[in-house]
Image (cartoon, rainbow, N blue to C red):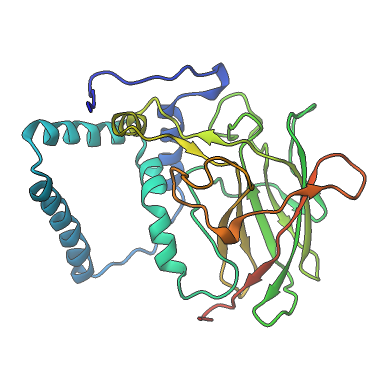
Length: 298
């Protein structure tokens, strides 16, 4: 196996797909502006513990696998390229976030979550249920009615709940990350009714490959891995006084449900699409949410 650090592997890409560097730079910019570090105050002891453990693990790997200087220098060059390509959000969200999410949600009762990924955009248009997300005229794909209800862990309906939804189009592209797409294509924040119920009209997304013409693609190629993510709908659900949940919801039958490059698929997140029964063509799925109150634990 060889990692060529002077040439970048480039797949055949359509004009509106953009590049890994473009998408990576946007993901880095959005994370920097997200405010997720605004309240970070980690004691020196905690920093020393985590950084020391990471450094020890890296050194142990060198010893165990007898890493050569050539491999070490290739790694150094590749790590630099991850940064210059803006792909640290992609790298961390694909290969590490699923474990961070598991650890941080293990004591939360109710609905299961998974990773956010690098393509979330806050402040999407606010709609009241029943809602239809933004689409283009003649939008390709299968129409999908996504509905459900919010309850607490005792079965009581939750008021003032909302669903943030975003996903790729039928070609696997995300708005604001691939050029030529409307800014809020398949992105919305939908307010549930007073009984906690919601309905969202959208389209079934396509599976897609994570960008492969940057540093992450080099790693994938050198390791002989695939770059595919199964088709999924991204969801953030929240309500005042309740713990928020971030999800990706999947479709049965996708060949990469079992070997998702991001390791984010869980059985509890699998949808059950059925033919629509309300008249229009397409599919419908129902997914109900059980939210835990703030401070509530298993």
